[in-house]
Image (cartoon, rainbow, N blue to C red; front, side, top):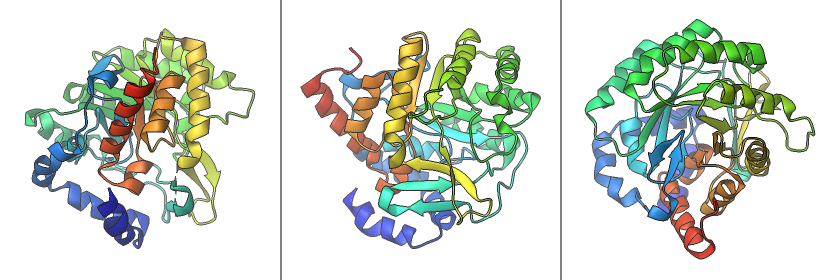
Length: 338
């Protein structure tokens, strides 16, 4: 991890964020390299084996949606030691996303602001990529994130992609995509889930909208969670990036991710855990970058945790680092889930 921080990250961070991202993609395209290196990224301990949406995973650290939008690099990403990797978010039709600039680094906070708006190659291209993985030995559980603004489009993405993965996550909460928040209306969410359930054969996750922990009114988010429970959703991802204004973005507003979200994430997980108990699994997503924070998320009630921004800031050994610290904490402090 020191090599990445001292050499690779300064080089990448000297570039515009999306240019650096594309350069990282070039590295991930060399699957043979990551297969050779894969054993060096692993750290397993039966103490922290977990589940995501009821599916057994070797460790509780998952890759959040958004890193591999077109499902091109899951074969490489699974070599980094994740318990599960998530491709997407996939939409039915290709999308250019929002105008640039649309990603801002907040280096002093280990954070990002993105206003990407789901740029991607669409369902057909994603199917072409993910179908190639059928013959690739599976080292991590594979989940695909899907979204859109039309129920039939989302349902088609779900139906077409489900055979090629272990579970699907519905993203109803990106703050950067016009029209997406329609599914935060209870009746619309129920209609979406009812449509998806007609062809559902594998576990379903829903990525929930964030709310500020200092706000007393969290009832809207919890009500959406109740609908998910009633419609047999297996897992809730809590949660997404937090809307924030920034003059450096072409559209003026994006979603904040990274370290500043951690305390709010823990507060939300506790609220969901208090409301739902063990009736639905929770995946903590937002601001987690080390084993201590992962342990706190599990202690708060999460079954797994998801990272993305910390991968960008800490590099490919971040999963191993988190799992090593988790192993020590599980040994010294016990299982936080008990």
